[in-house]
Each structure stands twice: as C-alpha cells, then as structure tokens.
Length: 188
Image 1 (cartoon, rainbow, N blue to C red):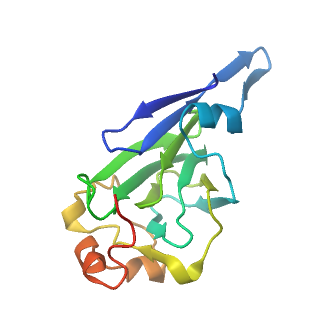
Image 2 (cartoon, helix red, strand yellow; image 1 turned 45 degrees about the vertical axis):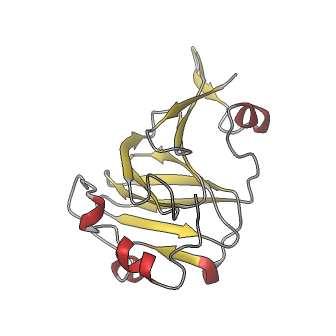
C-alpha cells in the first residue's frame, strides 16, 4: 500500500504518509489513489481541490463547514506551514483540543481532518503554497470559523501573525461559537 496512517492522539485526525519512489531523476509520489485511501480508512470522495499561496506570517483559519459537512486533507506544496486542527464536535471527549505540526513541501504527507474540525495554518516562508482535498463543495452559507488566537486553545503560533482576512480577524472564540446558534452542528 502507498499510504501509511499515523494517529495524532485525537480520534479521526490522522496523518497520511505517502510512499515515495526515488530514482536517478528525482522521485515519484501518488498523491491520491482512492483504493489506497479507502484501505487506510480515509475519505475517497473528493468534491473540490483548493490551493492557497501565502507569504510568511499569513494566518488562514480556523475554518470549517457544516452543510454539507466537509472533511479536508491538507498538504504543503511549496515552502513550510504550521498546520492546525481543532476538534469542534459537540460531545467529543476531545472537544476544544487543538493539534498542530510544522509541515514542509519536502514531506509526502497529508493532514487529514474530518468534518467537525476547524482547520488552518500559518505560512512560515515567503512563498508557502498549501493544497486542500475537500470532500464537499464550498458552501458560504454554512461555513464558520473560530478565532485563530483563542487563548483557550493554547496554540503556540511560531511567528507573529503578519496578515489576516477580515473574516478571520472577526471570528468568535470557541466558547462564543459554541454558545451561538450553530454551536452544536457537529456531534461526536
């Protein structure tokens, strides 16, 4: 099999390590193969593929979507990024728990976060490109976010934030979102 799954300590949030086939010309990777993802217990329905290019210090996130529920697999294509996922599934024993890891373009790796997780990253190099496999199409009417610097999450962002979207700057804390009208759309 060309995919090895590594657990993260939060149920359903996993790292999918891809097999690399080096030769004198460089290397080859299968980035996605449905049968291998299925055998590893990973989602195989890809409805949308997104990419972002960010400069050093830019923070994107923490975002999620509930209708249709959207899982995402993220990988760094160029540069380095500090990738974060937060469990926002109501009733989950790991609700509110954040996970993070620095990832680089040289790693054949997907960070796979199921629906019910807020996801985001910070660019750590001048040109950082991140690619996302999404299991459902984007729906702006059912998207949400939590504040990237919510102190309750304890995320140790590695460098000062250089740029944020207006939407990310105005995002609620996890407690504020949980108390709002959509705070229980994800259940464990």
